[in-house]
Image 1: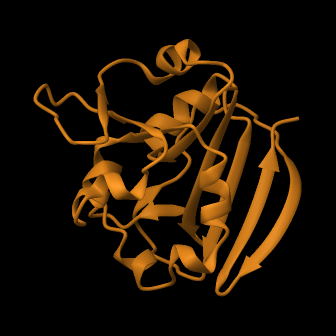
Image 2: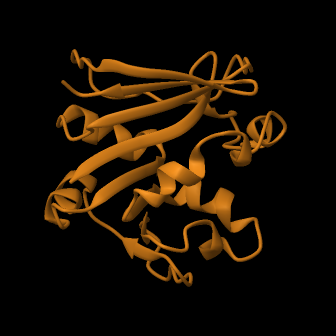
Amino acid sequence: MSIYFYGCVTMDGYLADKNHSLQWLHETGTPEETDYAEFYQKMDITIMGRKTFQEIAQFDNPASFYPTTTNYVFTHQADFAQPGFLAVNEEVCRFVKRLDNEKNIWIVGGNTLLSPLLDNNLVDYMILQIAPVLLGKGIPLFTQNEQLHRFQLIEVKQFGPFAELIYRRP
């Protein structure tokens, strides 16, 4: 099993603007301009938070975004029901450790999920796409505890306006 974070951030390190919107990203480029399809084919499971899911839910048929993976949404919402997505209400590290160790897991979004995984050295790969955007304020990608985490840069790519940095935990 490998745990991946794959996502796009602004040059100043934000996942979303201060209102949790990704409009800045939609105005910058599309997944077709990246190697998203190749990456997704390698994934078995997606994990996201409720706010990330809400961004996806704005589109028709959210399940079509992740048709071949088992998709989990971490939420405290007791009545969460969405075709193609399973609700989880527990601590993310404990949940991930119980998953099949032959599966590749994609942490789709959310520093609330990423931070404890980083704090427990559970993230194997960080694939960061950097968009040529500065927001000034927003939702930061990294909010983990103050602790040194080292990753090894294994590849750099360019997709249109995006720079992609691929890191692996040594």
